[in-house]
Image (cartoon, rainbow, N blue to C red):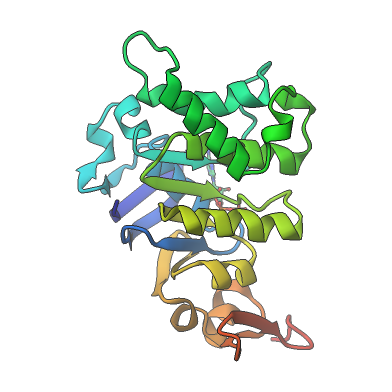
Length: 257
Ligand SMILES: Nc1ncnc2c1ncn2[C@@H]1O[C@H](COP(=O)(O)OP(=O)(O)OP(=O)(O)O)[C@@H](O)[C@H]1O
């Protein structure tokens, strides 16, 4: 399902945070949202998953303005995994993942066989089936991230919104979970701080700087040495290696003026 954001302006308190931001994620693509701390990435995601109403601009998923849908209707197609998302207190892992099915329930709100299958499959694919009966609060940060991703996948979304999913994950888990998301084929907008991971897994990048989308495009076109210096303040270059993978190489003194 296509995501389109156009002309987004957001002010928080008295601080203008996003200015005329637009982006487009084609069905099945993974688009990385990158930018320095405070550039407005999480704020933009909040407008997309309908937790922050923009002062101006439109967010459309599958051609429908998300702010014209009920939150329940929007939750049937969009799932979010948020930075250090705590999840509901006092629930087991299996109960937490099952919450992902809530937007699909009828008026009786009961789990059916299809719901149970979706939950089991999501737990299996995120590697958390052995943790099913553990209390969510007893998990490590990385385990909790896997649970929150499983909850999002159980939701069977057509748009996945990820805010620093890879925080707390060990290096293998980063590759595993981003690879898993690629395999699902779900349209994804992901905030990533790790530029190497962004370069490896994203079809396109949107670079935010001081609340503006300054560059949008394929990884190599976006991550020029000039952009890396002007936006991220580092001397580095992105190159496609003979194995086909794009990697970032930092200069000996990345902070050189
Ligand atoms: N309630 C608020 N009132 C005023 N300013 C706010 C408020 N919430 C966030 N901001 C500011 O908005 C800016 C963008 O914040 P946001 O969390 O979207 O950035 P980010 O790019 O996700 O940052 P990070 O990479 O550090 O997570 C920051 O400068 C932040 O201080």
